[in-house]
Image (tube, rainbow, N blue to C red; front, side):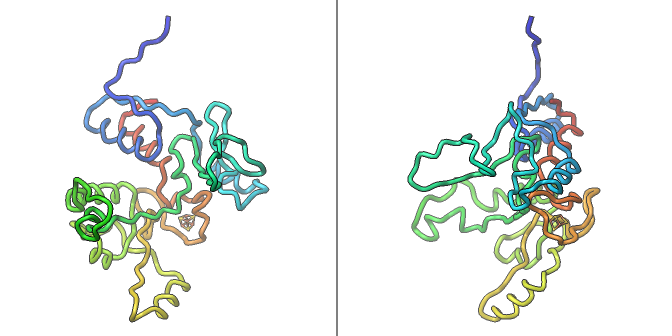
Length: 239
Ligand code: SF4
């Protein structure tokens, strides 16, 4: 006889969105079951795979492409997972593991600006959203606290904030300083808003800036879905 599983909520897919949702529901007292086709991976295993990989420029090479949860792979040759039928070749990459594709995502954590929600009213194109920036603002902040987002306060001129960033912006690189210098006063150059720690945060270390974010941050200074999946489990979600 088949096993019968009873639960309040089933979350299909343990990428960053599914995992954060599972965590929130579990914390709200719901019984949550998460389903994920891909294997559970650990950071040290992926770092080690990357060190041994002969294809260092291929961000996908350290991630296990399992028989039961395959994903598109183009090197050393296309595995044919996606059928390309259009006139323009397009080769999307995604990872099917616990935590999903944000194991490598370069950590860009920008908010939209208020006019993005009202492009019809403001610019006469497209459609306005049914919600405004202000409606979404508290949820942006909630996500930024969970991820650990670093950003410069001057960003609030463009994307207004009810509360400060969890961490100050990451220190500008030499290149960024030179570009800022050359473009001023005509252009304002803002430091990136990023899901990388500019200070030790949430038990994870400060980014040391050696730029290995893709394929993997070796020290977990960059937020990713694997952390979200662990947080969901810690909150009581089961697999
Ligand atoms: S420590 Fe290196 S790999 Fe990790 S977030 Fe910073 S620059 Fe990226």
